[in-house]
Length: 112
Length: 416
Image (cartoon, rainbow over all chains, first blue to last red; front, top):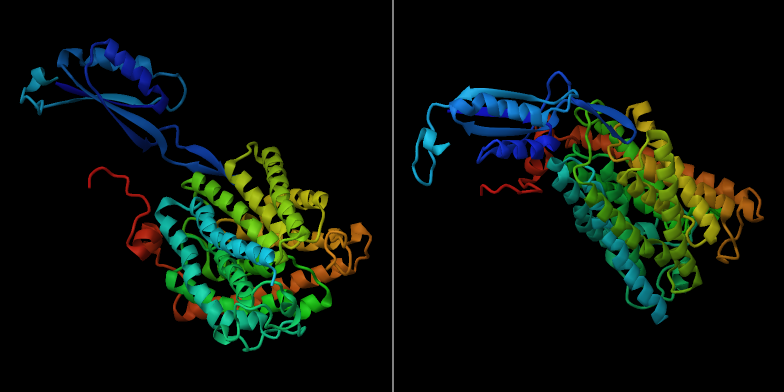
């Protein structure tokens, strides 16, 4: 099994979700995160003064998939999350040793 | 005794008291979440400490020997001695009031509570609670009571001819000057001015603004100390000045910074309420709009002072209360109108009077500013070298809520 992790723009989460469902994915986890990349934060104005805020709000999407599907689904996320502008985020794939479904005790590929 | 007058001042007393929790939330929304309870506590605590001190010593120092043209009251009313439910009992105008003496004293108590609380916006996120409690207690006795005597109790400024309907000098210039002195001794918040310290909940600030606006009806119209035409004019003036100031602030903000912000709308309304305070029962409706609009623009522009001169007036108490109080006190010298209120002995420059009132207003404003600034500076210095004014850097990082009060404002987690 593989874990696909994607850091995307928050307003792109719905598009990513729809695209993954379309591609056959049955579950995913989303969390609100903050960070910076080459974009280097953003500016906010308060009481007329401009400030640089290092950490920009992003969404983290995580989905565990079968080895055979990993590459294809990462591509699906890339397509869905891309705006072409700075700050679009990243996608990466990592190995997953073991997987259980808690309710049934199913393991590995059966639990995907 | 007049039952109508008494009923209105009873209600006004409750209205003004309600402004202090309103102020708590006005400021509370503007601080970061980890400091919210620290801010709320300072404001609520003012209702605890200062009400008691007012009965014990504050009232007599402010209103003892009313009408003497002097500097401070005597001790005739120590512990509210002879302050009863009957009409009359004090000197000067107090003898002619149509409301119970104890009601007048209670009404004034609510002013004595909110005035020191105004300072908390300037010292946000770093003033030690024990130091705050000590400061406002001493300040009530050493600064507020004398200045109230000068202006509200027929002291030297009133005798000179200066006018202050509900506290432009006594409340706003006074608190604003004290705030400036205190932040100079206290120093800046860690990270200011480079770090963005954005308000954590502007909805709180807007609710607080609404409560302040509502309560200000009691503050200004109640200061007529009667249910009459002057009170009604003061009420209308209070409302339209806040409205015009909000418009003035937002137009200026939009033009300079590109957006009309909710914080700007709230700050503008409060700036208008501040500026109309000295004028409320002395001017007509159109001047009230002009005074409000002027305050909205001028106070907005005054925001930049703290960055230019590098003092961390965290929530803009100086730009709104000191500057707004000065705007109102001085403009009264232009617009005071004997047709609105027969107590206006010398009319404003634009209403047909000479420049005499304007000069008196300037003297009253500067005297209040200078006295409050100097005495506040001394009190702050003394507390700093004895108790210490500031929380530690670690406490500041952790937040006032947990570090000083062992509580959190928001416990939203689902994990028990």
